[in-house]
Length: 207
Image (cartoon, rainbow, N blue to C red):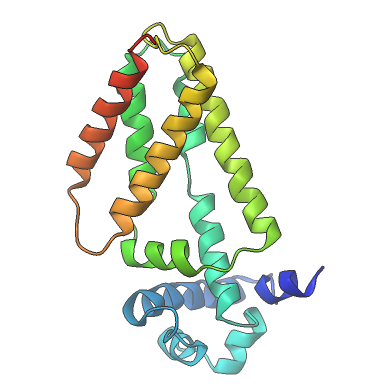
């Protein structure tokens, strides 16, 4: 394990329920502190105080706040159900708009827990090689499932299915990341409707 990996790895993997609850308290407190104070001012002392644990106890679990934010980002990735949603529906005889809407909705819902924390994770979360590799792997899984859907669905008329899959994956992910995480609120229903209309219109066009 490299020094960079050690810096971003949790120190202690809980084996008992009590220890796991402590770790959960630390992560929950960190999410609130980062969202409230920002990453620079979101110190481990503030996190420990909010979690009601000693600073020594916090350091038993995480070596620094970078490791805490990295774990929050990992959990965000764990909650991504978009690829699984596509796999469940790509072989079903459902209208294209319904499948795309379900896909877009899942991506949006995965980003609604705390938009301000999401912005911090996007802009400031430390990214180890392992974490970047996982992000890339999930992106390609999504692209592969979209390509399978486009190749099988009779309503899809766009000719270059591979490029279409890459465009749709990047468009949805980037748009949702940017608009949900941006300061100020956005009507997520309107965002969903506009993304669905844009994507289905593009996929039904033969060119």
